[in-house]
Image (cartoon, rainbow, N blue to C red; front, side, top):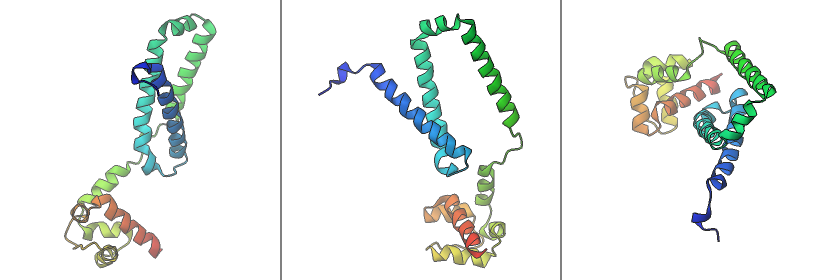
Length: 170
């Protein structure tokens, strides 16, 4: 049996770094492909921070080796090319007018059901019926957020039901 006192930082950091790298890489690919982005975005962002922290810890721990590596001109040249390429790629792919789904959800959540239903091509009575089919009692004058909080789904859950109803109708 391994004693906790005999576990070194390396015994913890290396496997955690490997796992966070793998998960961050996979979730990054999922984000790139726009596949289950709502499911993985937060995990990707937080695990990327964990991985970055571990990478910084690794650099600090091995700073002498890293400093020696930087004395080689080819290593510095490769690092500078990589840095410039990363900055250029970020500039080329940046979208200052990007869509913010959170703003859409917040706006729909703050709207009354009567005002939000047309965003899905539904009338108020159709939205009330769609929610009733899944056991949610709703009135047209309530906000989507109020309906969601009362039903335990939050606004996003109610919006999802309305969106699915609209998709099923088309």
